[in-house]
Length: 434
Ligand code: GDP
Image: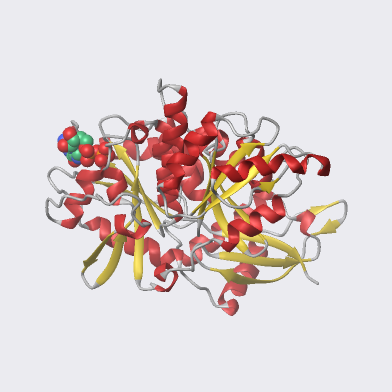
């Protein structure tokens, strides 16, 4: 999926445009995960194009001076995006800060689409001509507040998307990422997994996303560790900011089949762990909890159970995710992670035959009759699996409004009891039979 970044000096309307492009999605994700509350990263679509979008204005970079902040945001856009929307304000004309942004963007070979915002009506269109001086070709007049011109802008953006790469066809590779707060031991775990002290570096500026993934084979199975270099690299000012590291994590999650949520056994669970896990669930990824630094804590026969309880209590909606206790330092149980990842990835891609699926659903309904309301009873006609990664099931019924959340939950649990699905979210969609 291509990534689009919006860059521009403050007050040109970046968040307004971001929200317009994203539509209702942000609020949906927000409810479950609380991750995109910051509203800097979301999925979006335009016609048949799916993409991710970043509002670089939301990444504030410490106490750097104003122009420096703008410069760094432009650098983030160059590093993270496939296509950049350079946003300006038609009412104020070209400013020094716009020229600063332009100067940074000259350095990239990535496509830049210039947009002039706040052109709220056709009489104002003459205002865009000044913006040719920025050197990015035709400026696209838009109005974020009135929702004008976005279609043409997005057409231009989509026309610049890179051709789909080989990512989609590597079906035999399991892609996983290690996500967690700084110092939980992600880099150490990667080294332990790879079985050697490998220095993972990405020294080419503006590297393609693939260059930062590490391929690895274990017992005949191919894996790819996503964004391992990004995890290491801490050279630039913005790389130490929390929002940037969250952004990197979200991007890595999007590109993974299985997400390892690494928790520091010495410290326990923190708020950020929950938000990231929420996002992984929302994105429909396989999930494995990894409690690291298990060597460093004093244990008795109850310690593991207590930690397990803690995880279950804090991640109620992730009761299906297995938990591994490891030590990157002593390498204790580290290689068992590969077995877990493989098992989860198989569940994540599992297909259930319709006949078997419907037997399980019928049996579930026989045990626990479908809900009714005002004399109308929910009737389930049949179910079918419509997608994998994660598995999605459509249940055809007489009246979808009669499906209660609790009954849906019950059906999901029956599917889990019958088919396993350990480590993977599953989705159930209720539809009226046509
Ligand atoms: P990252 O920021 O998540 O990549 O964390 P690092 O891999 O850089 O590790 C942070 C610190 O924790 C380093 O000082 C490591 O040596 C230490 N560390 C990592 N894993 C373990 C472990 O399993 N046990 C112990 N005792 N220390 C660890």
